[in-house]
Image 1: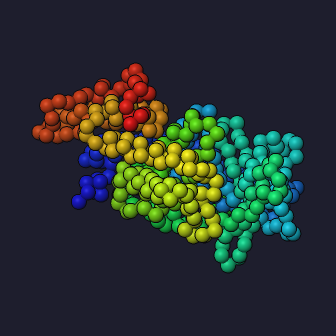
Image 2: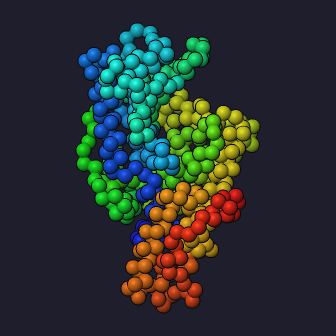
Image 3: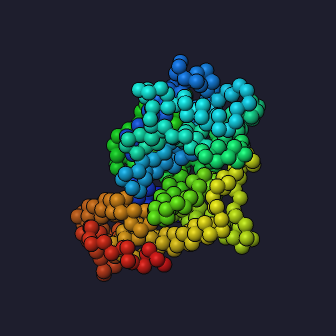
Amino acid sequence: MNKLLIEPLGPGAPVGEILLAETAVRIELPPSLHQLAVDRYAAVSKHAERPDSPLHDKVTWFYPQGSMAIRSTIKSHRRDDGFDIDIVAELLLHGALTPAQVLDLLFEAINGPPGSMYHGMVERQTRCITVRYADGMHLDITPSELLDAHDPRRSHIFHAKPGEPATHHRYLTMNSWAFCDWFNANTPVDLLFEQAYRKRALAFDQMRVLAEAEVKPVPGHSSTEAGKSASVVALQLLKRNRNMRYASRKGQRLPPSVMMACFSGHTSVPGSSISDALDTIAAVILEALERADRSNTLIDLRNPKCNNDRFTDRWPENAQAQRIYIDDLKLFRRQLAAIMSDQLTLPQKRDLLVVMFGEGPAQSAVNDYAATLGQAVATGSRKIAPSGKVLPIAAAAPAIITPSAAQPRSHTFYGSPWGSW
């Protein structure tokens, strides 16, 4: 039987698996920021329905969509960037309003009069209204109109790019509610994994999130009883890697997170390890993109619960954009295989993790792992292989390293083969 099924993330787990888990804990929102997001979600919901709002008594439902609804939100890899919270505002729209009029109405309701809570913090986007906070966090609020009361949350959303001719404006069908329910059902929490992962999340940040937002609640943090599966943790890591790869590609639209989540939901297997889930998700996305490329078409991925809801309607813009991410995924799978192999030393794994997920979380993950190794060595019951694997004394290889070998050193990873192979 797979050791990870018996003791996930324990001493018997591969070094790469432990490092991936430690890195994932560091890129997700800590409980403190998660609670702040929940509080702001509740506050903006109440503000939109205040007595003097043009939407007073016209909002039937607020609900989270995107990463907050499936517990896959991650921090930005840049300190000056925050993270977004995606909200749907289901409206009662009496009369035939154009897409631009609906978005303008929501902007007016949230922005409010001078001196009000969000005045001057609000931007009107193509499909949503964005509230930007000084600390970098932002809320994206998408207005919707329910299409059929007997098909809950299948809705129209509104596309009206500022400055674009009205003839280009349109109504789009979506059902993010049904997709999130489908995703969560397809990525159920595995009890053994959840317990092991939650211990690491709690160890990294002891703060607990206890409050619950009004309206439709945002799911809890992974350090609480909400938990998460290996597939969701893998999705967070893949999103982080995508963000790292596209950070220097100014003006290029990112492959959509919902596309990545959809493939994650289709491929989730109970009892999977993080590394297996990560490689599987990357492999199926890669195969789908390559199949489209071979056919001289662009990938066309639909919501499994609402076929008219197209997840790839704005990306890829062209064949070149599609091929760029194909190359990224090929590189990522080679890097992941190297992380999971015993051929690299612990310092080499650290350098590769930095390239894949960023210096802050990677260095912190390896430092904490090295400290754990130090405790094992101090007991006299364990030695450490060059790869960082903990070995019983009787099985230890002649060549061993000490935790000090994994401490910070001058950065060489930018010119290393890990960033270019």
